[in-house]
Length: 475
Image 1 (cartoon, helix red, strand yellow):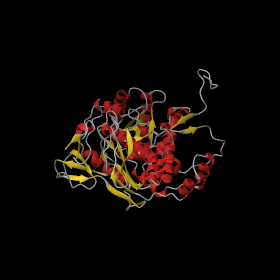
Image 2 (tube, helix red, strand yellow):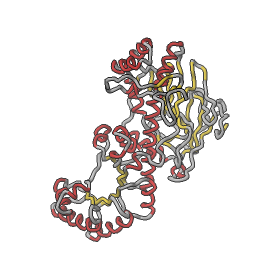
Image 3 (cartoon, one colour):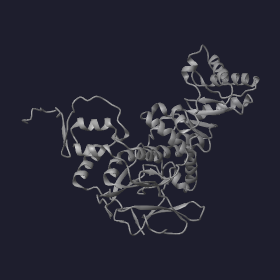
Image 4 (cartoon, one colour):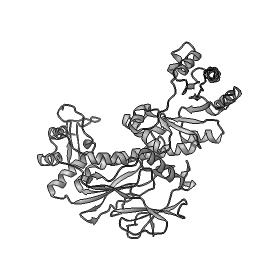
């Protein structure tokens, strides 16, 4: 080939969008700020914007093109983190030193970044709001460089948190009134994801989390029992159970499947009677393996036969909305569920087709016309429309931002939450967001909430918006 590279050998660099990517000189490592959580092309575009004088105000819409499989809705979450990021966005001196060492950016651009602040405005749905395909959940209006640089972080946070909240809401629906707790921390994709799942799952209706750090950070109730290692550390299951009950006489749940589940329940009954003799009560037993439906029925019969009807059965171990629904429909007498891995990574739908697209520049509407990825131009408003004032959702209606209400019994979903880089008013508490989520889900048609093959709420599009893309309904 004449380039010194034989068949099967790889080049040490590639050329991508006219930018040569090569291994940089060895640099001292440092802890970058959140401002560096940005795709490189946001920064290269920003330098080109700056040098060309193309710095007018722009509006960007964040939306999901298509709902993930078996999702009739998504539950909006992540706004609090987005607003905190925008309000505090700064490039530190270490960030700027890093840019200098890369040699990829000019001194003029680095000087600009030294004074960088987000000065724009944000309109958004309230956290805990159900939303559907092609509806903007956030619209950012700011000088174009500011709006461009924040894209990566915003998509990341909203995509992750909304998928988590939606997954949790589905598990809660499947549980049919039984409590569901987050047991996912050890297998989420990193500690940040574990904390964010705990918060989002609480929005989606979970009753608490095993993640103590997330409990402290967000004020979420913490929930836990014991591990098998605790049981195997003692000479007998009875000794382990008694030691734990002595340590927590008013809040003990015993893990009964370390050796033999039925015998474990027998031992738990003995400990429950010990607690009763001291004026305390065993809270529950936990099943973490085996045929949970059959074992829960056996355990319930044993507990009831021992006059321990108050002892709750908790199930865990590889559960998601589908397995929980099967247990509920099968009549398993389970009072609570600990749900971990499959929910904590949103296993059946780990990503969404989230996009952040420019819709205005310098006062003129702009749009993308690529097949399958066309966008609506201009700032927008999403109207939620009801058949009756307090009835279920009938459909949504997408209009331009300043349009009048398109029909009766309609309410706006996008509201200004940030102006001139500062949050407007006080953000709702996590419990208030959780309450909104419960209200929102309660007003969706039952067919939208189905776990498999759901329908979705129809989104009408007003005539002033471009409706040339397939699948979009023209009014």
